Image 1 (cartoon, rainbow, N blue to C red):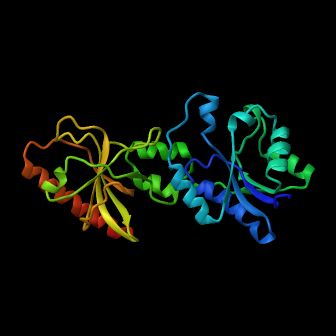
Image 2 (cartoon, rainbow, N blue to C red; image 1 turned 120 degrees about the vertical axis):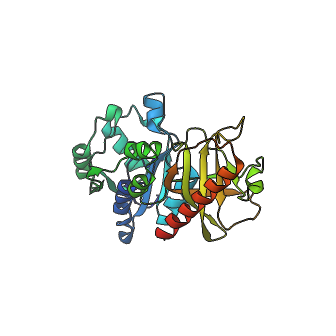
Image 3 (cartoon, one colour; image 1 turned 180 degrees about the vertical axis):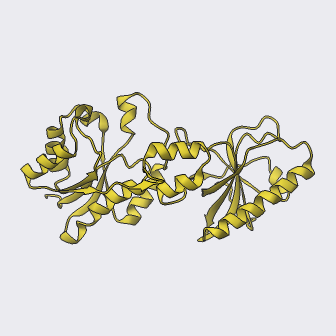
Length: 295
């Protein structure tokens, strides 16, 4: 049985930022005409095959899948190694036409495809015209006078400029991980915390203390996350340790998503436990205000 005609969104979609969403919106606009909106995705970032190293992951694949599903966009997976040496014409014919039955194609104005990136938007226009496929180019999205890009987002996160990263993403940069058992020092300090470790290859934010938020059982809570080595304690490993304000339940073994709002301060060592408690209180008050202001 022939698959339904699709409206294929083309791009890296490695962060689902505002620019990516414009391309996806183009694909979704064809739904009323009976085309299935879908995004062509790769199991691993193309640069892993091209350059031997992939950039850090901005958005975990599990969260990306949830976001695409929520938008109403279906995923179409391909192995980049199988198509990287295809000419633009072969990619169009073998992948877009034969595999995806494309009735429409959507991309950004800087999109390149085919071996060595030989094909561009003008190439795509010619091929679409030849085969009777519609082409829709998404408008360029800018923030701060510059185009939104995954590289800009990575730079912002690494520098601790979370508001800029979040503005370009159109949602809060964050991570989802299973809560691991810790030393339970937070409970002794009057601020119970959850310990989480970052996935290999994930974009790790600048070390320090962050105002953030978490959603638990349908309710958002203000939170404070310490990302790093916690210098006040010896022999600590790199992790995210988050105090969820106003929550004191058991989350061990559960997956919890932490969404960053703003960088508060660098990590520093406290020799006096009372000074550490005072700083924790101050961080919590700042995080609460930031959380309330973004509601």
